[in-house]
Length: 204
Image 1 (tube, rainbow, N blue to C red):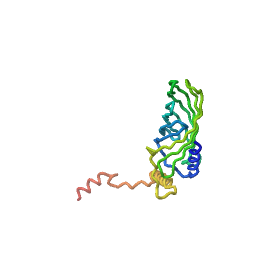
Image 2 (tube, rainbow, N blue to C red):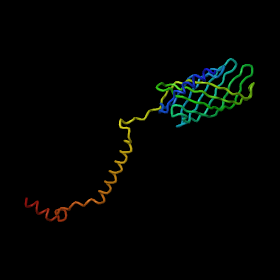
Image 3 (tube, rainbow, N blue to C red):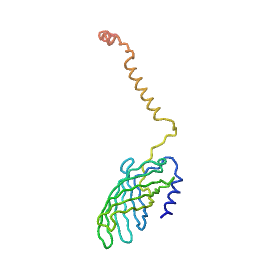
Image 4 (cartoon, helix red, strand yellow):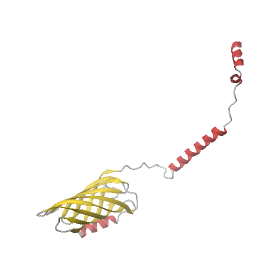
């Protein structure tokens, strides 16, 4: 298990403070001691995800649901997360068990590739289990199934939106002042005196 952590730490050391590709849905594998699991992570808020873990071992199988808060650690590519949830499972020769979980981990988005690497600690309290409490540690690799749409970047990076907004505001202000202080157009004499207009038509 130590080898997995050394690998994760090495990869995390390559992280930079550049902006990461945001993701909405990611799924992959999780190794937790003698348990092998499938993990699915779904973004639901700007910095929150829900994670489902289905784990199978020699004597037990379980399903866990977690709500997780993500915060940047070294830029947006490397973050830590914490959360909590509950689990249900079946233990060989013992039956069904349930319980509650907490989780604390770190996550790294691989630069240029649609993969997420994470390492976590997951303490749990069990009901109807041989052990009433446990502390597991795991590593996960997930593939980004659905990435969040990127904002289109302008070729001119220096505050183009701000300049456009200012110009728009200035044009609106000038239009308002033009309407207020604009000199009225002179009224034609024909419009003020309709009789002249009638006699002019007869002369033509």
